Amino acid sequence: MVQSSGKVGIKIGSISCSLPILTLIAATLAVFLGFIIIPWLGLPLRSTIQSYIWSAGFGDLGKNAEFVSTRDNLTNDNISPALSPGNIDSKVLHNEGISNQSEAELKQKKQNEDMNQENPIKPFTPGDSPSTSTNFSSQSTDKQVLSNGTQTALEYPGDLQDKSASTDQTSAKGNRTEIMPLPPSVVSESGTATIFRPAKNPGKCDLYQGKWVHDSLGPLYKNDSCPVLSQPQNCQGNGRPDKDYENWRWQPMSCDLPRFDAHKFLELMHGKTLAFVGDSVCRNQMESMMCILWQVETPQNKGNKKMQRWFFRSHSVTIIRIWSSWLVHTSNEAFQFAPEGLTKLHLDKVDETFMDYLPQFDVVVISSGHWFAKKTAFLLNDTVVGGQLWWVEGYKRKIDNVEAFSIATETALKGIVNHPNYKGITILRSYSPDHYEGGAWNTGGSCTGKVRPFTDKEIVTNGFTNLMWSHQNHACEEAKKRVKNSSKLIFMDITSVFQYRGDGHPGPYRSPDPNKKTQRGPNGNPPPQDCLHWCMPGPVDTWNELVFEIVRRNLNGIDA
Image 1 (cartoon, helix red, strand yellow):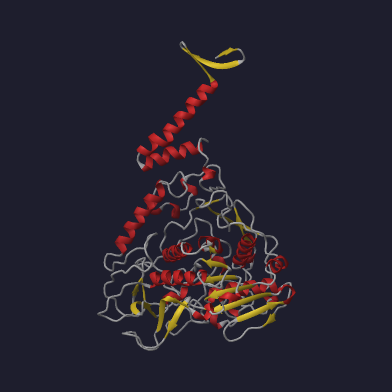
Image 2 (cartoon, rainbow, N blue to C red):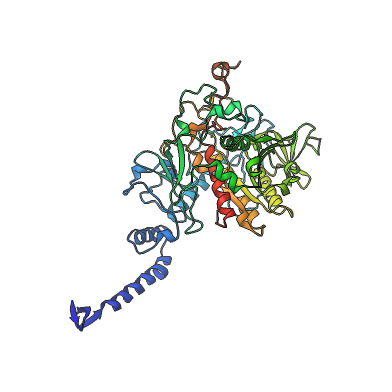
């Protein structure tokens, strides 16, 4: 070390260098290493080097991804097996786009190929057209092969009262599929799960990256303080003995999700109309919103046979619900080889039931999915191209129910955002996960005994749920490409967040009748449980806190 004229430098042999020159040399070497040498290396080695550089502080991971952890030192023991598909060693957690994701994708692709050997169905990948034709081998009319290789002959009631639909989500071995969650997650020292994901928009708060935390303030309302609460979701009124499932709130990592303030919501929505369009799970969310707002004002019922309509006079706010099981046009007349009485989904035609009223709405929350396991025929361009729990031998089936769901979602979104007289905010709520264990809804499937949110080690990710989410997300992205103002179309991504809330379903407490909780059917099976809809009050109230925050941001010019 030498010092001359106030300058500090280093002398190596006969060469002396000032610190600024050394800094310049070091920076040049770092750039050369990062942009010339590393790209020449293989992906796994490159990822390791990049991870080391980030951890050493040479790279700013915060500019490229939001990464959170509740432990300072993560070991493989702290990571859920779901984070390591096929027991892939994951001692270092990366954001998506680094080596582990590629290995997981290859392993999942191989698993899909193995499952689809006898009944090949083209797996969905981002970029595929949702309407791409797929060749199916002949199926019997009482079975349907899903895109994840699952065979089912069960028509799941998405609403045990309204007889909507879902699927039997068991694998060929009878166990639920365990694969990587939509965003991966880590387990905190308290045992709760923390979800992290790459940031699509650096610097923007991700509402869906966070954790469930206990809330001492309790629920926003009580089950006996809401006249519009449907009895099947009135878990406390139906005898559920525990109630701590009501006392958890979702906490994003990099920002706050405010507790729902009904007064502020009505002020924000002054003179506006909020519409919920979808199936029975959509109704579940609408009733949650009504229960919350009912605590500050009793609305006027202005509904009719076509829709539920509630008017809050203090701020001229209207809340509407319109039933649309599939979001597309349906018919029952005989068509081609599809018989009369069989529901036919016209996947390329939007359901006019809600489209006729669309210009009246300022915010639309739409959701669908579980009815796509109901017995139906699928039509495109006035041609029968597929069916669920129904088909005729000798005809070539081109799409399955998951692809039909994707096409229908994209059709509905494009119809909404391209309507010439609709200028509102459209929120697509992502697929709501169920939590049946040990069987399907009518074969003894249960969610009894779940009294708190799952930890990451407890969660068993459902492959069918992830598949539906993937198609739904793809449909939303495709619709955004065709809209002038994409900020008005928001994907409310609750799927991975709610995979941890198996405690929030009615289960056996879907009726005050004790016989419906215990009395077995003629076949000896226990009575069906509801592990799809959500108790009220309960986790579903979080959906409306997210809606509130999305609308607030959008109306204030903040990217939601």
